[in-house]
Image (cartoon, rainbow, N blue to C red; front, side, top):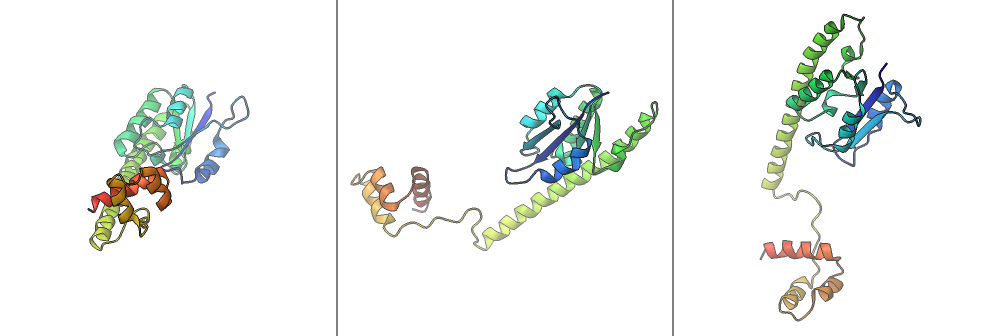
Length: 205
């Protein structure tokens, strides 16, 4: 009998994996050290070389089962997800998706083709929906950014205000009257911030 593995993923380091972890834990086998066989990533779904996912692929064997919370945890687009699902199928690995109840069912021996057929239909629909939702989100983000720029709004991190004496010190620095280190000390900026502000300032000249 094979082992039950889990895979959880979020797109950024700021996001939390706990919700997916809680959903998978009841199904997952423990390894020799008593730890759940769950692999995780905090990385974009478009990254095909996610470390956790690649380690999962190496660890799983024929007869194992992979549990995921939702189908879009495998990848960012329909084609990528289908390729992974086909890869698992060819290796004899069953994929069960908690958000797709029919994939969680087991069929009597000899009738597996029925559940596979149903799963293929559902997965086709869900991957199409997931991809469409993502494309819609990206379009809305793009429109929102364009609208904000048109209204003169600043996007991203707050702009660091320059000290009042910046212009005078900048001219002295460029004239070799003071060194960069002195300039940084006078405006109380670390090196990375200093050169970033210099670049920003020079772009306005």
